[in-house]
Image (cartoon, rainbow over all chains, first blue to last red):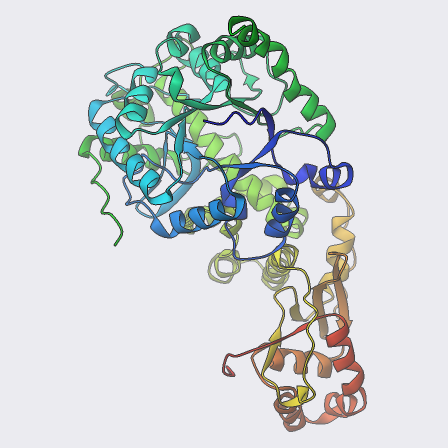
Length: 274
Length: 287
């Protein structure tokens, strides 16, 4: 899969600066749902971005593990947007968030069972076939584990990706956050996933409340997460990397500087491959 | 033909059903769940403890996040209501009861506030109900105008008077028993917390007030006070009437509004075209 380089999550807070300065940046990731409209200002802004930059779609509302049937009206709009953006892949989260028509607008955790692997893998395969574009699922930051769990998260995640023949959108901050909340070693996570399935890596900041860590995307990437990134990236053949920042926004220029720090940690990869 | 989707395993559904009953329990001013249920006992059945947190405390993280995300979204959609109530009172008196009755049913958060006017009509019982209802409607209108497409310049044919028309999506009309636009503009100059211990701006109520809200070519959102006759014509056009039929309708009302329209119609039409308020309409007229 193509390596787009280093990108940033496109947020409205940065539109003015981006349109004014037209920065040199490898690519942007958009939240698909913000642009799944017929017309209007969001699409007008997206058109301007598409004139200059590659764009990858990342969704938050698919709710692949929900008990409700897949929403093909939603998928139709997602696919139409993909035609417009020419996104090389589409990602969403390995979660649920919808039940009996109610939407919870959150990325809720699934129990790690064989039954759920079968269920989610079937649905993920349907989604990928329908979209006719490579589809990737992202690992969550989670705050609970369930009594039903039969295996660790990385085993669950890997099994779904393999069984559905989809890709991994690996969030290394989420590995760190969940490792703190559930008490596992991040190495156990990234050393036990099919790394060749990783199409993209997410980086982000979080908030440490002492008794738990919350995935807030409102701060710089911490050293521990950079360390996980360096280790994961070194195992890949070089994959697209993206910084997410969703609150306590910095200027676009400073956000881009933070994202560019990834280059320092990619050196391991260069060393290994030369 | 769309593929059929598999049925969720019963154990998964049971867990998710329980999870959402906890998630959507109302939240109080101390960010705690409002319930008579023994969530501690229920959570121990489904959720493992962590090194530092009990099962109920772990569920509390999701519960808080659910409410904070949705309430924060409502704060953005309803800047006037937030200033009238303050954050805490808005959350407790409006946000939580509203979201409990009108649980989000759409994947897009942009739809989150659309049922607020209905909730206010049905469930808000205080004396200032008209102010609260119109404030909600006005906040939603600003939101819709902001997201609407840019004004589209359209060349109309010579028989404009008989052409079926409508208003472009960025144009919204308001007939109000008070000058809410001036009140809102003054409120929005200060943060919500400012108004907790300061008097509200003056709300003029001497007459009926007619406004058009629209987006200009620089994407700025403008409100313009207009006369009653001007508003009636635009309202008729919004419903799909031709200008000629709108004028006929105004004639049956008569009075000063009709007299004014007789003199000002050409100038108004010029404004509608210059500001791109009109659009051709293939729909039939709806009363």
